[in-house]
Image (cartoon, rainbow, N blue to C red):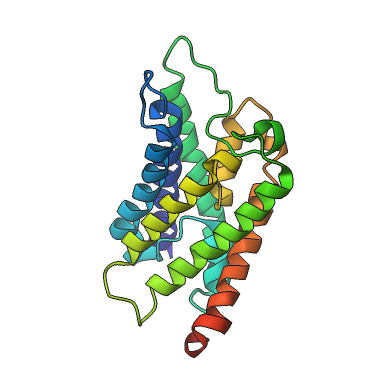
Length: 231
């Protein structure tokens, strides 16, 4: 179990450090940075790389909503859910802490949004709380369908990390303007802790909505798309 929890810790660490790091350090640097397309790709690449690196150890969840969805789909032991959640959140916070140490190494540093999620005034495009809520539920649900489908026995072997990583990239391309994209409570909590724009007060939505979406996606897959894979 220690190896599984360690894999989840480091996988979530890398997701937050790499994904949020690209947004914070490279998105607009110096004037022609990687932009939101590059940030979207960076989040996808964190999942691809760690899914190949440690996915065989822990399953490569790196996301409390994914762990919940896999449990509801019969692909994950319920007894392991809370330990996975704990190390995912701690790993995400550790990744954000290291990123903060690096980012604060310039004299003009200001934490600002710190790649956090938000709605209304904290939304990159000024989108409402309802818009963010719907986006997070729908996109997380589809993320679970992608994960469950690409890892099913009917899918081509060996390509699941690519499908999942590209799925996360697409999700970010859709929703960065809406709420800076969460679909992952651990990622949202980690960034909000270090942000100085009040994101911590809105983080509840980016915990609740992905969990609802993860559960919904798992149920859609289990009972509509792959009933033969029921536990």
